[in-house]
Length: 539
Image (cartoon, one colour):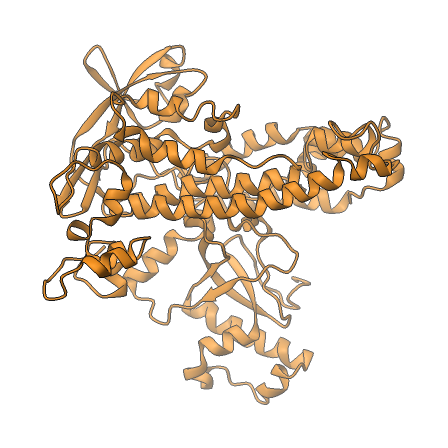
């Protein structure tokens, strides 16, 4: 019996529990299937009637296998929208599987989510919805790390059960999930292994009081939290019982002096600064994302065999394991890196990576070679021809900027210099003598004393796409005067090439309106236009 639903139903990571109002709306044109009297009483709060309606809705949706899509704003990347099989209960809230909170960037402080129900679910749509199930996306698209939420309960449960810390248990789960993904048994793995740790954490309830913070050297909850890594960072714990670095020699447990609170650079100053940094940093990061998607959005995956050679230094910037399922060249021999052979090359200081080439297939429509992309890191499968790889790339690079802006707020640090990062990302290939991917990466290695590359922690392929596309644009000419593009702004404003609606949708509205010939026909090329103003593109 599932006590949360009042019903004996099986719940998996691919299930979401919805209030009955959602189910009634989904079948509103077919209410005779429900066969429940006095539905109005349930909608007005009759608890027993709500349970009766929920049970009937579950019978209906168990039979038809229909799915819903959940979305939580801001939609920073692909996994911000996922599909689920709906279950129903008498409550007025959404019952979200705890493991998917990470990919939604959701917590439990009143977050709102949108639920979409595709009324038509034919074979093609069902196939797409199936790809969006959480069990089919256990890893993050950006770097292949775990997309499931384990940082608190699961880590603590594993610490109690096996004396593992967060790093150790994450490593184990990633390895075992990779095997489960290949066997198509992710749901079973989550149910058996992760639920085990979850139950242990629930039974060994973990609380933290001021007495345990004061007695921080003893075997108590604070020690367990620190040792396991299930919550917080070392610097945050030190602020509780040691000192607040750079502000006060006192700590939050004992309290700090009025002077340390109000002085210049004191606690109140830090709080105001980090709050403002958050607001401004997130705004800059959002614009950075918008700009990336506008720039890269017309790049699709194509089925052709062309590449560019990039000489890369391994070690501090890149690991050989970043290029798993990618191709390298050694002494004119092309080798695909696989799990079976990759260890042979782990001590190489330099490697020639075969990076997928981007070609223009029609006006402002570009394709990138599927063969040299490697695998989709979120599913471990190959990418598919026609996928919007440019949109993914823009989202992933921009999303990290947004998340890092939020993280600096929570830690009380200064925000990242997003504007500087943006300028370097977009301008490199338009400057003279800049023709090396490795130098492009060096751009991000030290910005205002920050190692941006390690902060972004995104797989090399997405930086390669950004580099290769801006390099391609640097050799293109403005349509109206045949002069080479001097920056990405020239590309954004080239309405003769991209189309008036496409350019007006990003920063160039008034300029286009004053320059456009209304008696002339233009071709719109943006990926958005195919669903905004119509188009015959099947992607």
